[in-house]
Length: 80
Image 1 (spheres, helix red, strand yellow):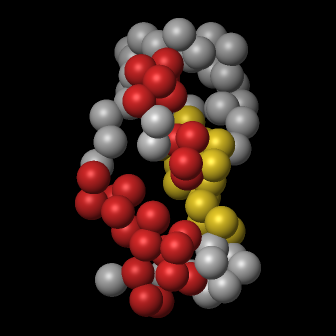
Image 2 (cartoon, rainbow, N blue to C red):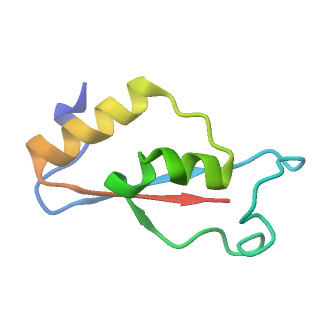
């Protein structure tokens, strides 16, 4: 599935939009502009998901991890 998603050197940006009523510790800090770009490795960490109140889709993370490893693409995430 990831074969045609990216090429070597590409940047893939995952945009995760929280519902308006989401209550997480960093929401007020990044409410207007979203979080800074976060590397995939940090995005996958349990502390990051708790800090932003995220629920991950394992299939999406697996695809992004595959693209990063096999295609050499840089994967980053931004949370709004």
